[in-house]
Image 1 (tube, rainbow, N blue to C red):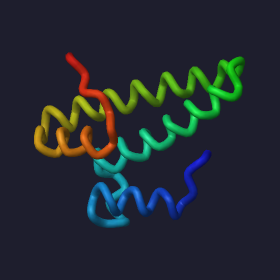
Image 2: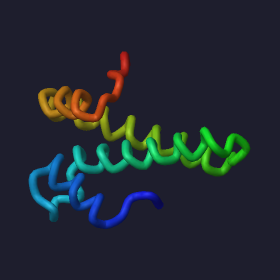
Image 3: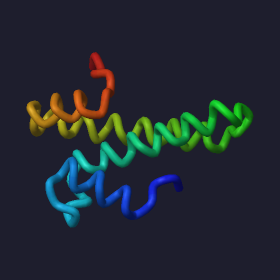
Image 4: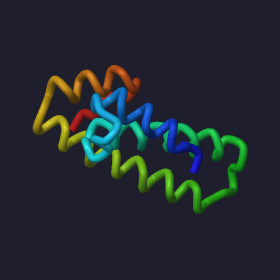
Length: 92
């Protein structure tokens, strides 16, 4: 795992407002995004690591499900989250 506990606390504080609100959807999406970036960099160096590739696909689909949940419940928060994390908006 690439994220240390200090990095996670900083991400959680940035996206949910409080260090103890690690369960908020916005902070979970941000943590998933950082993990996806790390695994993507790893796969650029290690092209044949298929188990990491499978983990990346699973993380991307988890993040997609959480993003659809956020979009359904709070559209303004969704737009702000997409913009701050530089994620492309899905067309579905």
